[in-house]
Image (cartoon, rainbow, N blue to C red; front, side):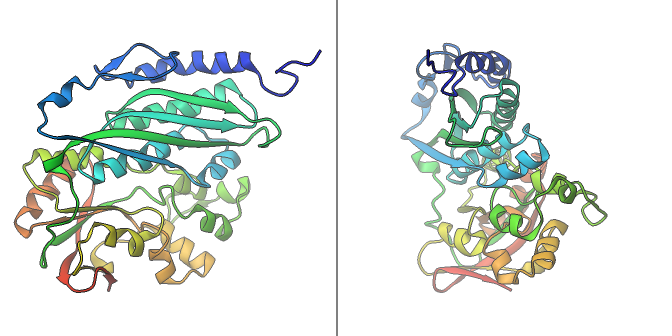
Length: 342
């Protein structure tokens, strides 16, 4: 007799992984979450948005790219979920929004319940860092499509903002100041290049480097920094963020112009902060040109925000109060929309 288990899908393992992850998921619940885990849809009350003049929903979806390959080789699965959440909620925060809830999707070759629960533990941690509720998700077993030890992880977040508070860059002026908020490392972009520069073997990743103060693997797998609290602090300090750029795939050249209106150009001073050692190692070991580095990686800045000069001190104080490091990294000039790194 043929059945689903013989075909490679273990329904019992699915039940077990849900049981194991329940406690992590519950820790993320906000008062708006209705019902528990196990329904067909995640329910979230929107009664709080009645206080807004014109509520606008913001959404973002993303994965961790080929960073998951690093988790496979290191057999470390407890932080990759933070990356999935960060990539989505940082985009929502970038528009001035507050993330409300998150859903994750894990596709795997074989469902190992403890491993799936560990991944979801990381997702829950990212949700806690961004005060976002994990209201549901899906673990899909794909036998024959993916190797048994492989998985991919993606997520989807929904947030809200009052229309008058949307950050869209439309009123950025010449002489506005650019403040960069430090990244925690490579985050979740550029790993296809990283994997060409360094051997993805346990031996290579377990090598300790003085410049990094830890092993190569530890430096690379460091989870993406979540900036929700920092940006919320700036807003609560009464400061208007005029433009905000989340430095992800495409680095500075692709992401900084996304926050600019026509006829405004960003000028960023590369020497305004110390580029972290991991990026210097990638450039040297891979013989990667500087322009390509800034076109692929965050180079130590996960977010760049544009501010009125009078607001810079208050904004930086609010960012530091959230536990983040920040620097004045440049300014805005009149000119063709784009970015100059000098």
